Length: 532
Image (tube, rainbow, N blue to C red):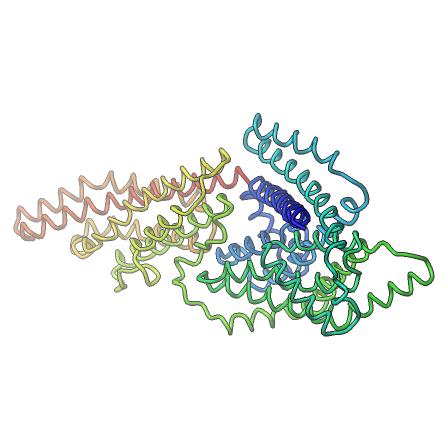
């Protein structure tokens, strides 16, 4: 019995290790491109569903797709109703694992073929760099999946000899419900529905369980896969919680349809097939059942994505400050996306800062805060977020992080300018200085608008900022001379003259610092564009 349990645990472990290597390697290779694909191909609920299917089939993990989708919603890259389509597509895409196992893993022994894949992958990892090394990890992971399947088959055959599962046989609803619960527990313990489905297929192929039992287990495993999303959403953003809620609602709804409608129909059809054409391929039948009830759920829920989005939004209202909604913890597993999220947060802070400065220079009474929280707190939140960021492995991600740190450095200087915004009062009392400020304010306003809309800072706007900074610098001697002359003629007091001269230096620094921030942001965006 111990050898059976050891073989079962080892097989599951090898399968999980292979899945992790395959999934993480594909995510790292996709990097920022994954974000671009998700944003580009989710314009409608249908394309969002197809994108979810494709991405999940590629990375072999619906959890990875779900977690990435949560982050994209938080970052504003996906509309929430389209994210629902991605979640539904991910549930269909994850059934591809069952087809791979049924078509390859259960047909013949592939461990002898898989071992060379593992060896080649390890060699590529040791000798290669960046994407070649990641491709090696993916290849090794692919090989480990099938080695794990072979161990599972052997262990399940031994389990059938030592464990009597006849108590769970039969077509009774109570028995099937118990098996559904067992399937939920299996997925929660393994933290991977793909591994649970692979174990069920191995048990079915070895004769340990029959089709009815296996189908009930798969229904439970499909429900259990929501546990990871629920755990990830605890303490997360409202978007994370809403997406997790939709995931649960869809999986529960699909499970109910499968349990009461599709499962009895499938058992009946298999018996008819056996009567007329002989024994069916049960592994393929189970893979088809898994896909069928996910597709059935999609047919039922896809026309109602708007309703689902409204329900989730009503049940889970937004509570996080607008400036921090991009910093979603689910993106930390993909450094390229986490860096982009931090950059978007800084971008919003810069946009609000430019807007605030422009309005104050123009004499409008505004509160000296940014979207309800100071720029200082926003920068502290970004620092805390980056402290939890894993060390980027690829050279492109490392370069993006360097650009982001440069952007943060320049933004801190801009924060200091914001803290001395009281100079605006003295600025407005001197016509020569006010003239400079009123020339700068519209440029700041245009920059703020582009940044707030989530668009890259246009080159013509950036050039306008550079020219404005140079012009302000060139006009300073004239402005300073006018202040000094007014002080000498006693038109203004010496104290007022000193305040106005300090305001003149502040305005020159402000123009220069805003320009540097724009250039740093442009460099960071260019790095993202090159990688994508």
